[in-house]
Length: 408
Image 1 (cartoon, one colour):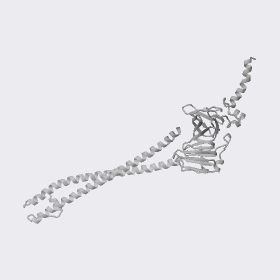
Image 2 (tube, one colour):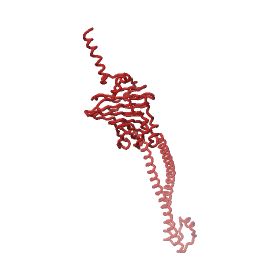
Image 3 (tube, helix red, strand yellow):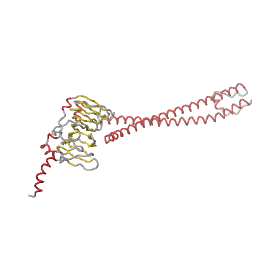
Image 4 (cartoon, one colour):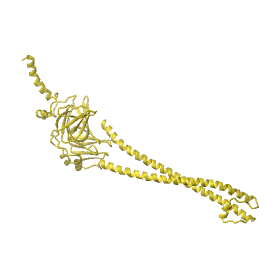
């Protein structure tokens, strides 16, 4: 045999074993589990590291967040930023990371996570994942002389773990929960922006509206399999957990129905208000028209009556009164030649003009009051419509703001 082949045959097997042992050569999960099941958490930290698919059960898919189609994982793959993992109804996956801090992440069935960031600093590392739906169990361990943490984002809260074991669940629509078995964590409410430390044995439950609850509930804790490497265990659904730890407020569907009912009632009020406004507009137009016609008629009558008054005051003979009909309606008969009679006619015509002027003034005042009322009602209607439009726009805006925050 060639001497070089002999040398290669002597060096290659130990090199392969060393590469597998120190995670330089990725291999399938079945072989790794048999060779080094106890080595998962006890590896030497590395400066530039990535999560590895340590074990899996069933069909688990990985996808770049851009536009690439999902790929079925086989085990041993190295994951990068911007990738998304999804498990089916009967599949699980275990990820490991060995850097300045080590972590194990068990992803349960019907879950999806996005690997947002893998920050490798000089003396600190941070892993940021976005849990879109489903449940995970996370164990984080900081190695001596170094620091790091894992940030798990959901739609309603962000959870930070530096040392310890936690379970995190979200239904993606209504609520998120963090339950701490060992160590501690910190929850940041994305609605109120406040931060809450969560100790071992405690649960942090938060909903879409920002309502939160921190409590000790051992029954709920007992539901979790706190050994993340055991892929045969099951994780309860968010619905089952909230039955035990208590729910916070109505579901998203209930809120949507209540909001639709409220908007429907507002629409009915707006419609009735508009109909009443149309009736008032027509009445106002009639009042304005009557007031204008009364003012025009008064001006014409004033000319006639004042001419008759002047005739009565200056002539001793019978006047051809244009306002005779008015006088007859007021009970006067012709009694010419009597000065007192003429004086009475003058006084009566003067009172008539005053009464007619007051009548026209009342009509104009009534029209002005109605016009002011109409202006006020139109302002109220515009305000109600603006508030309704703002509420709908805000409802559309909030999810986009939350999604933008999650992307950051």
